[in-house]
Image (cartoon, rainbow, N blue to C red; front, side, top):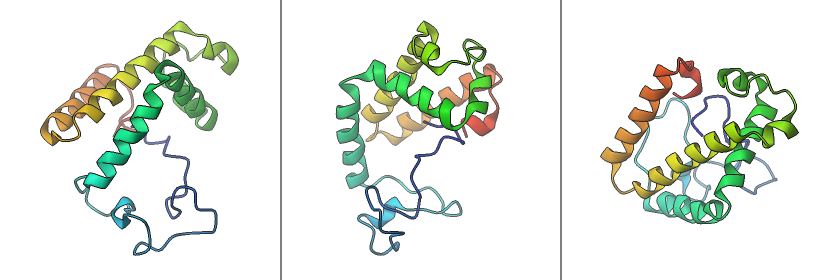
Length: 149
């Protein structure tokens, strides 16, 4: 999502769906999918781009609900992130928050950004510009950089 605190919820040493322990880098399916913090960012492989597109097709089927679920999960796992959102930082009940029109609206805006990003996977310069503009807008909102770097 871009939040430095959110992550994927997966252990970076495990491949998706693997419950038997870490997968050595050379054995991981598409070993370029696993990177450490010290590795420079690499362009996405065609396999990675296709996985992103396939995932987006599934998520897009219920885009509004996915946006809400994403934020509720973020706030459950990292409650301090909720303080950044002035429109709903004072709503403590997550069930009430799920019904918030402001959260629904922001969730759709985030999903729209993801949709635009997926559509620009083959246009790295446009994708980079899109991400830059998102960062710029978050600077204007005084969002701490740790949430979007």
